[in-house]
Picture 1: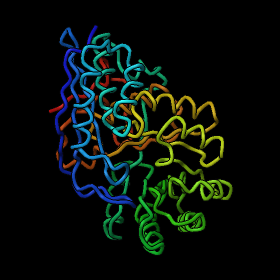
Picture 2 (picture 1 turned 90 degrees about the horizontal axis):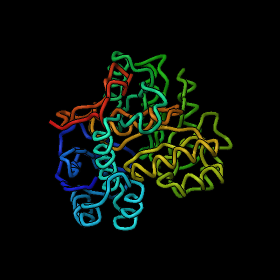
Picture 3 (picture 1 turned 180 degrees about the vertical axis):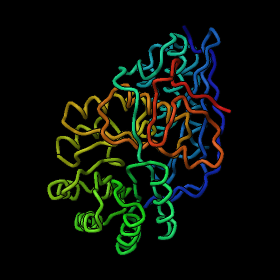
Length: 356
C-alpha cells in the first residue's frame, strides 16, 4: 500500500456573515482541500482551515507548506500515519492546519480501503454528539436575533464570543441573549480577549444574575497569562477551558501540572489529527475534561473531528457548528445532523464526507 498522489487546492467559500472573535474576524472560509490517492485508486480527503486571527496561518501559506512536504508524503505506506505525523511535524511545524489535512486525508483513504468508518478506527465509543451553536461578535440586535433563532432550532447551548470590547458591551449582550433565549445553557468564549480574572468572574456573575446557567468559560485570558489562569481556576464557580493555550501534547501536560484549566478544547487544526488524539488520551489521564472544537471548517473538517470525539468518547463539550455559518458549503457531511445532534453512526467508510 503506497500513497501515489497528493493534491492540494484552494477551497474558498462565502459565509453568511463574518465569523468574529475577540482577536479578529474572518469574512470567508479560505481553506484548502487535500486529496490523497493510493496506488489502487482509493481516494482520501482532508481539509485545512487556517485562521489568521487565531494562529497566523493563511490559505497561501498552507498550500505552500503542503507543496514543500510533497516528497515526504508521496511514495510512503499510508498505514504509518503516526510516523508521517512525526515527519510532518519536523518539516512543516508551523503549519498545523496543513498537517491536519494531510493526516486526515491519509486516514480517510486507509479506512476506506479497509472498509472501516473513522469513528470505529478511533474506538467506537459512541455515535451521537450534541453540539452548541455560536453567537460571534457583533451588535446587540444581532445577538438577540441569533439567540431567538438558535432556540427555535432546538439547540440547548449557546456559545457566546466575548472579550475584545468594553466590559459593559459584553454584559449588555449577555443580558439580551438570556432574555431572548431563556432556559438555554451558556458557554462563554473569550479567545484571550478578557483582561483579567476579575473581569472574567464579573461576566460569569452577570450571566448568573440574568438567570443563565454558565456551563463553561473558554480561554478568557491571554494564552501566556499563566498566573492569571491559575488564579481564575482557583476562584471560578464554573469550569475554565484552555483553547489557544492548548496547542500541543506538551501544553496539555503543563496545563494539568499547573492547574491552569479544568477542560481542554481540542481542535485538530491546532495540532494535527494524530497529536489531537494523543492530547485527548493524556488529558483524560490527567483528570482534565474534554471539549471538541473547530476553526472555520466545512462539513469535511467537522466530519473528521466528529469521528475523533465520538470514537474516543468522553467529550462533555461539543462545539462543531461552523458549517452552519457557510452561505454555500463546498462539502457534504459524513454525519447526519438533526438539530443539535450529530450522528456519525451512518458513516461506513472513512469520515464519510465528500466535496461538491
